[in-house]
Image (cartoon, rainbow, N blue to C red; front, side, top):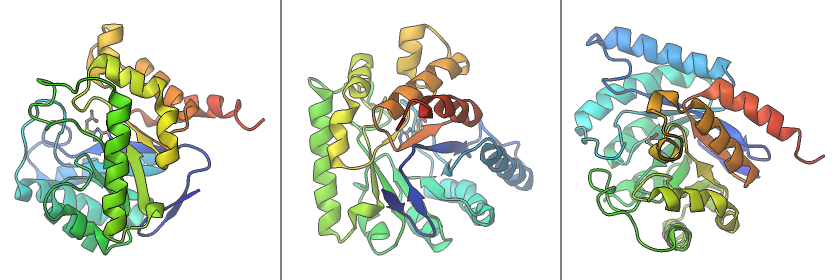
Length: 273
Ligand code: 7PJ
């Protein structure tokens, strides 16, 4: 199975690791734009050295309760890095839901649009439909500012499956080939701890829809069952990534690339033998 993106056809026959590159003030910023760009690029290079197959660049924190950033601010954070990182010659994914950001990074040649809103913001679907970019469509219940205040009720898996199925139909109507699309149940986005873990336990039920991208890295559900702070969630994150791979995930979105790559190397020895 190949994932068709702008410059690359990504082989999904073994799980791929997507390294997270956050370009937010609390990550690289020291007020100096040049220094920020340089350290963000160095972080990209480090993740690649550690074995990342894809980089996911994001300029707005979408953690529960986080504030939105303006379009201009997001563009200033993301676009210079995307332009520089193009020459690293690896698939570049941009984590954004704003159609103007999508258009700007696609003009710069970006390979993948990763949208927590699954292209539901006005103008987003038309911004990507005519491109060749790979797409990740994520399920989210509610909105980032408020989603943990009223988590979804009932069978999370059935609702996630129905939502993703409907988005695939919508994208098909817009002329987007399914070969460009990965689907994501959206761990942590408006779901209870129990719902997140049931999405992991029953993850394989989503596989008939298409290849999956899964992000458990450092998420609060891992803290809820371990009592560990976000800075201490390396082991739970790596375990969750391996469990997601075991249940058929194609792409794992992680902060801790070296450790995830090592864990997957062990897991892979149990596959196809
Ligand atoms: C996800 C994401 C995820 C996809 C974030 C965080 C919050 N994109 N962007 N899937 N999470 N596709 O990393 O904790 O789970 S931002």
